Length: 183
Image 1 (cartoon, rainbow, N blue to C red):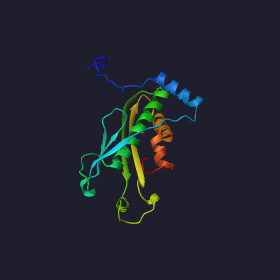
Image 2: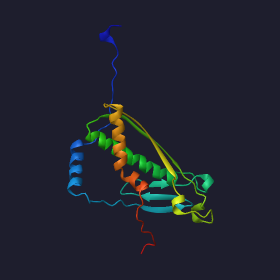
Image 3: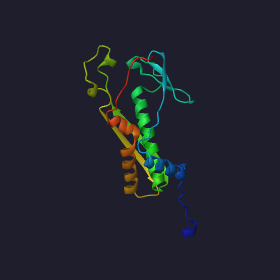
Image 4: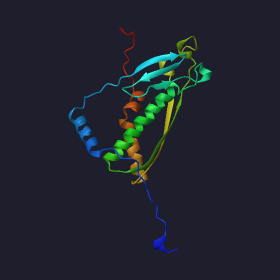
């Protein structure tokens, strides 16, 4: 086979976001660093531990518990939904930072694991635990990323996105909670 007839490697890139729109959004943030939006969810119990959470005009997010925790195992457990929210937020951030740095991505996958236990049985007579001893005790995220940049540049994109991730920072930092019965 001659050099001119050698097969060529074709790289396909992930569908890009609007870089100009991203730059305008970033400018708004620089001009008004205290701005905030509000996310709203309406959760309804369907029976046992199965819930339907309504977000905007999307299909409901279904949450359940596995059989060994007395659920019906019809959907992901609450902790798995938290990890998927984290994975989604990190993926958004990585995509945004790559777009900002003009790096085209050809592959982006996040593998998330979290160590969680429930010896308190949701406060229904299980072990006496303090709030800081419940919930995820460690979360691990492994990112597979490929694009038209060096491994070092891709690593910096991932680290930068993690630093600025709203969901990752919600999990890392204490958040004031207002909790009580509805009017």
